[in-house]
Length: 150
Image 1 (cartoon, rainbow, N blue to C red):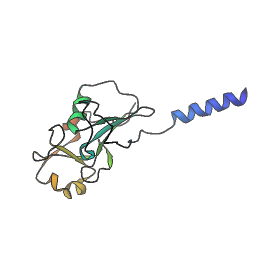
Image 2: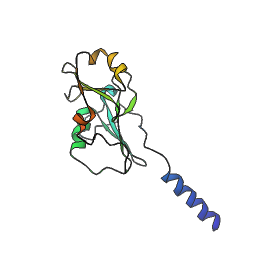
Image 3: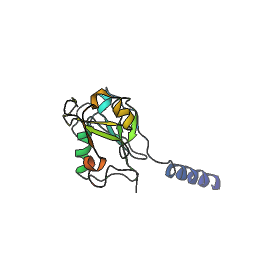
Image 4: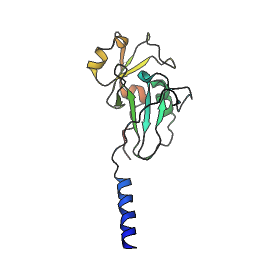
């Protein structure tokens, strides 16, 4: 009995101490946007909300992620927003990404927004050339995107 209780306690502690949420792999054949329900078919424009112990919520366009968050849905504790670097498709925290509005960029839902991990990635991406910088606060509101705070 004592061993069983100890094992359950260890499992409970492990579940609580998994650390911050991490981005999940995107399946462009099967994942749908949590906002508009369209297929997330182009990883270069994708975003996601990740929370410990939860299935990720994917978005096909940064505009969909923005609209979803502006609706202020209740989010699980520890939720972190991630966006794909348009050039590399690597996931980066939305709060630290560099955003550009490029009217010539053909985004899935017409937001014309692209994200990059940093200025160097943006400057190496011809799609972002000549675009206007957009701050995370301007895109997601004064509080910015979720960063995992309780």
